[in-house]
Length: 221
Image (cartoon, rainbow, N blue to C red; front, side, top):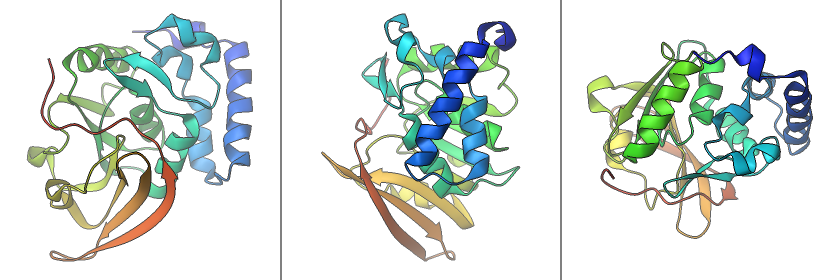
């Protein structure tokens, strides 16, 4: 297991405080989310040391396999929309670096995260275990469009890639009262929050525009 205390120095913690301040200035007011951003050592999630010096910039950076580690503001934004309660069972579509999953875990969620890129899945699963998240984040290799029906229903679902449409399979894996936060669109995505009202009805809310890497169907070796 990685010794976070040794690898997360006072310098890193200081940079994280500044990052939290920057995210708050952009309109994130949820104190629990800001605390979680402050607690997760983002620099430990970079697979390419080239970008390490910029780990606490409020930007997305490449992590290989055509994927990125999400911008902290975006992570905070989606996490705020999810309104996580301790013990929530959360499906994450697009594990990526594991950074978003770790923030959700810090908020008290039990995360079921699915990744379609095999190489990225293998690396991130080991990293999350080494960082102490093996009990709070369960990683799966599979097609995000299919979700995880064997583990459904979920209290919350978060999609961390640009979906061309809202998959019916994900809607069907929501509990009554559950929330799905998903960016939908091609070049520019609109952040949507969908709430399941009953067995046959969902309510949709529209929020700000973002740019995500595309959500792709199937699995990749």
